[in-house]
Every structure is written in structure tokens, then in C-alpha cells.
Amino acid sequence: MTQTSNPTSCKVVSGLGNQATSKPVGLDILNLDDHAYDRALSCVHCGLCLPVCPTYTQNGLESDSPRGRIYMMKGLADGVVEPTDNVLKHLDLCLDCQACETICPSGVVYHELLEDTRAKLKPKRKFKFTDKLVQSIFLYGFTKPLRLKLLLLPVRIMQKIGLYKLVLKSGLTKALPNQFQKMQQMLPDDGPLWERGLQAYYPPTDNTVAGKPRARVAMFPGCVGSVMYQDVNRKTIEVLQHLGCEIIVPRKATCCGAIHHHAGEDKGARDFARQNIKAYLNVKDKPDFIVNNIAGCGAGLREFDHLLRDDAQYADQAVDFVSRVRDVCELIDELDPPTPSNRVAKTITYHHACHLLHAQRAGDPPLRLLKRVMGLKIVPLEEADFCCGAAGTYNLTQPEMAMDLAERKIRHIQESGASIVVMSNVGCAMQISSEAKRLGVSLTTEHPVEILHQAYLG
Image 1 (tube, helix red, strand yellow):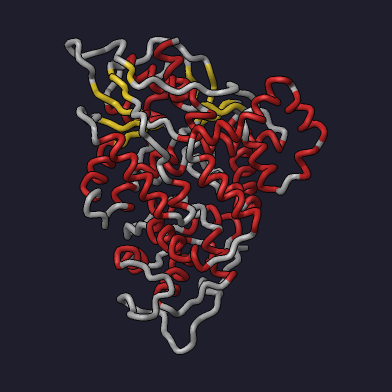
Image 2: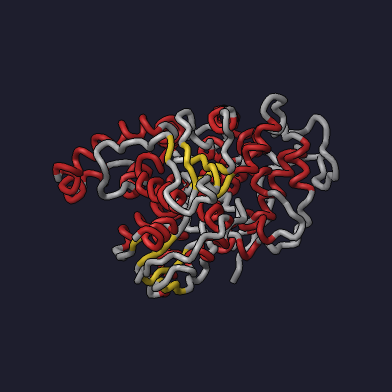
């Protein structure tokens, strides 16, 4: 039986109603701007979002649904709800998967309200030491490829000399805090000792139009992508070269800022946005497209216009930047490529990354391209569009819910009969792989571009 609770099961400021239809003056605990506040007012509380919300589906609590959280965020903004531990618990449990936005008939842009609320609440909050440490590692270590390489170097050395497996067998890692155990589980089993960088320029190799490139494409390699999944970056470039594109990789490209934005560190996210705009647009020959192959990064890049909407110097440039952003499958689909000539004899199933399907509304191109690959058998996946629990750093901050969602996803993958699950997000791949390993389930994760590379280039 579905369990329900009061959506504002929290401390209410006495003497104040909660039915305001315009933003009250002087009561706003959050100091939300009018843009964010309007997001709350546009919700008509119809409840269509409830069955697509992963947290509500898991526990049946109204407070853990988009509708319930909007009640709480509006109450905070109106000054009728205080940011108690109970309120913060329900807001923190949101994955920010944006499935509610896809289904919403009123067009509520829920994630903007949630992220602005989190940013405004963060200075008022106290976090555990381990939470602060993990967040610092991600904010200041994972967002710089050089720092990430240095962080991984001891692990890579141990992997190369065989010491890493001995450490795992010894059980020493079980002495680590839970969040660090999860980080260890998500590490790839092997990889280069020191990942080499990409070139600054790659010319087209085939399918040019009258000898000219079909498109000038700027590659966004990503932070984790540059260090742990550089092979996917190289295959992305090679497929685009084969399809007649010239590729540039701006040397001053930096983090997309998504980790900062989701963590309520909007100043850092805005700084990254400005740096990337300068790196990609302040050049002699602007790229036709800015391509990425990590759904989380792509969603972050497409937030630049929102982040910089009040920046007089960068607002227009941010709109220009966002107009050029494409997921790699989205771009390949736009190029209307020829049918691949090589057979790929595999049976796969496909998981929709939330940040591609919901945040970017670009869920169709990967499947459309994969269906053109000869020999590839795609079997349906139940709840293919349901979050796997990765959600950026969510699987570290909310491990119990993240594990429940991963187990649900892995169960459906097993039921599909496929041993290969394809997805367009490195975060999903790390989450599903690590949880499958924990559960003793044998499966392989692949990116769509890896299959397309095999289909086009053998």
C-alpha cells in the first residue's frame, strides 16, 4: 500500500499562511530570485510527476516527490517553513533526474528551483567532516584532469604491479568510510599509468563535401572523461573525422561546472562557464558545434545561459554557446550519416541516461543510430528511462537510495537477457558497473560511440 505523508512535515512559522500567489516581501528565508520563485508558482499539483519520480516510487512518501518538494521550497521562500533537518533530508534525497519535467503538463522547470534552493541553503548548513572531504575531492580534485591523474597515480601503480588486487583481497578497504569504499568500487580495474592528452586539431579523413569539412566541431573532453574514459573521446573524434568533420580541442577548456552547480556552489559553476565560453567562442573560427559524449557534462554545458543570465558581459555569449552544444549521437544523427558497413554481432540493451533523455531532451538519437548497425540485436529494457542512482555524486551522498535504484536497474538488465548495457553517460557506467560487481553480476557497459566506431571503422 502506498504510504503518504504531509508534504510539509516540517516546522511551520506560526501566523503565516502558505497560499501566497506572489512572492512575499521580507519573509524569504532563501532569498530566491523572481525567476526561480515563478518555477514554484507554475506547479498546479496535478501529481502526474509522482509515478516517474524514482524516490517517490521507492518509498511512497509525498515529501519525496517533486510536488511535495515544491511545497517545501515554496514554503521556505514564503517564510512559512523553516529549513529543519527533516526538510533538508527530503530535498537532499532528490536525484535531480528531471524525469518530472519531461512529464509535467505545466512546463515546470523543477531543477532550476531545486538547484537555486540548494545554493541559497548551503551557507546556512553544517555538514559532516567526511561529507565535506568527499565534496572537496570532487570539487577541487575531479574537476581538474591533472589533479585527478595525480590522485589516481598511486592506484594505477598498484594495479600495474599487482598490489591492488592483493589489497582488495585483504579486506583493508573495508576500513575506509563508506563513501570512500564506494569511490574505490567505481574505479576502472585497469587503465594507463598516465593518460595522454588529445591533440589540438584533427582533420577530416573521409566524407568531405567538395574537399571541405562537413562541420567544424570543438570537442569537450570532460574531466573524468579525459582521465578514465579517454578511449571514448578518441573514438568520438575518429567517428566524426570519418564522417567528414574537422575537430579542434581547445587547450583552455575546463570543467563544465555541473558538480559545482548541483552542490550549490554556483560561483564556481559560473566561473567555469565563463572560462569555457572564452575557450570555445573567443577564437578566430568559431566551431559550428561543441560536442561532448558525457550526458552529465552536456547537461551542464546547456545550463550556461541560465547560470549567466544576469551577467551583462556573458549572457548573450552564453546563449550562443548553448546553441552550439550537441551530444555526440545527436550531432551524428544531424549529419545524416551513411549506414555503417561493418557488422557488429552483439546483443545489447540500452539504458537512457537521465541527463540526456530529460535534461537535454536528446534521448532518441543514440537508439536511432544503433538500430542502423547491421548485426546488432537490441533487446528492450524495462524501465529503461528510470534513474540508475548515479546522479553525479548522489551515489556517495545518498548511498542507500542509490544502491536500491542500482539494484532495480541491474535486475531489469538481467531480465533482458543481454550481458552488454549501452548508455551515454560515464556516471551511469561507473554506477552500474560498480554495483553489478558488488552484487556478483557479470555485465559489460559500453558507450554508443564505441559500437558506432566498430560499425564504421571496424
